[in-house]
Length: 519
Image 1 (cartoon, rainbow, N blue to C red):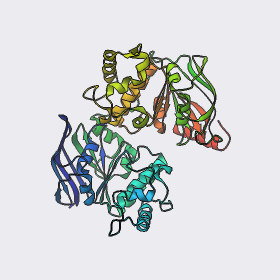
Image 2: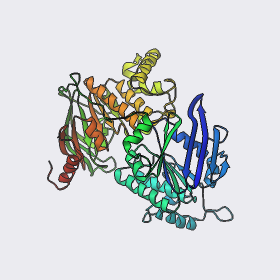
Image 3: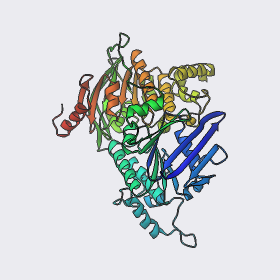
Image 4: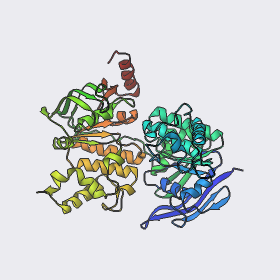
């Protein structure tokens, strides 16, 4: 008979009369890695917040049984004392404190008089780091000196220092590259060997299929089914069918027909050079030349650190770098772009890869987030904002790109990741750009929401817009783009047509460029 460490029964949770969870049931066996899958807004994170005490007992109905005992958690400390630790998608580290201080934040190693024992803190921090493969890391290093991948591992080390028995990871690999993601998954498997039970929420289905022993699928606040490895079909297509309620035979909508026509050059970049904002002697972008035509979707492919985001941000109003040189032409005419205002005036738009930091004002509503970039040119006259026009356009775009929300007055911070991404897209569509640069447009969102973003990209191309897509997922570049540039170490390593676009050709461009051959 299986050993059930966690059972959540008939969990129901309301937000302002809207049921985020409706009679949800979950069983997790001791020592397994259990995945929660579902579209954005399905209720996965809400369920884990109920379990960990973020949403305290009394704010939901239903029962939580942990190790055979009915639990009523009123705060996170209550669940942590039982050995349940949650790591949220937004890391809870203090950037200016050391690794050791972060590992024991809230769990300080003190003497009998309440004074922190720093020798013990550093020693135990080293032990915790060794469990996540960071044994060579200096525990005195400030966390802000580390990459996102190592910060994610420090969060796990922090959980290990609390004697975790049930570890909950909410989108742990969303901001990681392939190498960092693989390392984190291997650490999860290693923790499993040492008896740690894990629950992982992720939209990366290939990772789920690899690491999970069981998958529970949640759709629209309801438990749909639980799949067991070795018993049920664990393929990505099968998981997607459970998530969206139908077969998703083509993950990338086709862009065919007479309405999709590629026209003349809209934007051309000549001999573009950018130096690091922190080091005037270190060149980040080196002599880049590219162009994008009306109705064309052009990809920027490359490995992490290739310079794709740095290139995009430097083009969008010199938001990155110093000693920038080169030329930008719009419709064949040179333009001078010194700041973001100039970029918007010249019909260039850019959606950041970090939507929560750079794309949205999370405490403001959908309407204001959609209209803010176009406020000066579209929604105001003589400095006075036309609120009625704002409402009309926000309602129009909410419907146009299917933002799932109660109303345009809802705070964007309360939306799922996929719907937040749609709001960012609408914000820049409302500026009526000729060129739209999309940096990791589907990062951290599910397959259903991805399909809707891809459809919106196709609609922009149909309108004759020039679209540039930056993505770390090579299948996304291949599935959405008419043509792609491959970047490597700040230079163009190759240019591939739609027919040439394969993962093998992209990697070949990079390898040949590394060998100094070019292509």
